[in-house]
Picture (cartoon, rainbow, N blue to C red):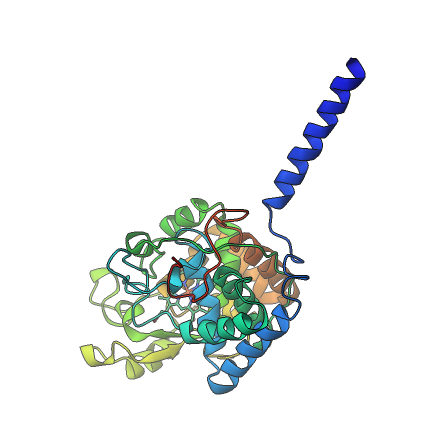
Amino acid sequence: MEQNNAFKLAFLHLFCFLFLVSCQLDSKFYDKSCPNLTRIVRYGVWSAIQNDTRMAASLLRLHFHDCFVNGCDGSILLDDTSTIKGEKNAQPNQNSVRGYEVIDAIKANLEKACPGVVSCADIVTLAARDAVSLAGGPFWDVPLGRRDGLTASESEANKMPSPVEPLDNITAKFTAKGLDLKDVVVLSGAHTIGFAQCFTFKQRLFDFGGSGKPDPALDSSLLQNLQTTCPNQGDSDTKLVPLDSVTINRFDNSYYQNLVNNSGLLQSDQALMTDNKAASMVINYSKYPYYFSKDFTVSMVKMANIGVLTGQSGEIRKNCRVVNN
Ligand code: HEM
C-alpha cells in the first residue's frame, strides 16, 4: 500500500515537472518543426540591413516595444480593426516604430518553409538578436516557444517609458515588468545604434524644464551642433539625429562613453548619470565593452521573457498583422 502511494507521488512529481517544462521557453523549440528557422530569420534581417542600415536599430526597438505592452506576444504587429485598437498608432509608436515589413517578409518565407509553426513573437525576438549581432554586437541563444497574443492595447502602449520622464519613473516601469535598475542601464545601451527625431530631445536645446535655457548637462559643442540640426521651429521636429554620433551604426559601448562625456542625446539617457548606482554601471561599461556585451545578452533574454504566452495560450498567426479566425 505504502509502495503504491510512493509510486503515485513519484508519478505526480514527474507529471508536474513535465508540465512546468512544457510551459517554459527553449532554444531548441523549433529544431524539429522548423529546422531552417534561424537561417531564414537571419537572412531576412541581413537583407533588410543591406537596404537600410538603420533597420538593425529599428528591429531592436520593435522587440522592446512589443515586450513592454502585453508581454512579448507580437501584439505590436497587429493592425487596427473594428474590434481591436492596435498599438501601432499609440503616441510612442506612430511614425516612429519601424520594421513591420521586415517581419512580414520573414514570416512569408517561414510560412513557405514550415506553415503555421513559428509565432510572430518569436520572429521579432530572433530578429532583434540578429540585428544586434549583425551591427557588431554580441550573439546569444534565444529561448523560443512564445505564442502570439489575441489582442493588443493602445492604452498600454501609450504608457511606454518617455524620454522626458525622470529616471525613477522609468525604473518603476521596468520594475513593474520584472526588470531592475541594472536592466534599465544595460538595455539603454541599445541607444548605441539608431536615430531619434528632434522633437524627442528639443526641450534640452532651448528651454530645459521651462528655464528658457539649454540643459546644463549637455556638452557645449554637441549642444551647438544639435541646435543647428534641430532649430527652434516646428518644421525641424521630425529630423533625425543619431543616438550615438560617435559610431552611428555600430553596436558598441560608445553610448556609455558619451554619457560620461555629457553627450547623451535623450534626457533619459543622460539621466543615468544622475543616480549613483546607475552612474557607476555606466562608467564600468564605458571602460569595459566585454561586460556590456555580456550583461546586454542577459538583460535581453530577461526582457524577452516578459509576459510570454506558451503551451495552449494565444495562437500561431499566419499573418502577423491579423488575429486568425
Ligand atoms: C529606458 C527607456 C527608454 C526610452 C525613454 C527610450 C526612448 C527612445 C526614443 C524617444 C527614441 C527615438 C524615437 C523617435 O525619435 O522616433 C528611441 C529610439 C530607439 N530606442 Fe529607445 N528608449 C528606451 C529604452 C530602449 C530599450 C530598452 C531599447 C532596446 C533594448 C531601445 C532601443 C532603441 C533603438 C534601437 C532606437 C533607435 C530606433 C531607430 O532608429 O529606428 N530603447 N528610444
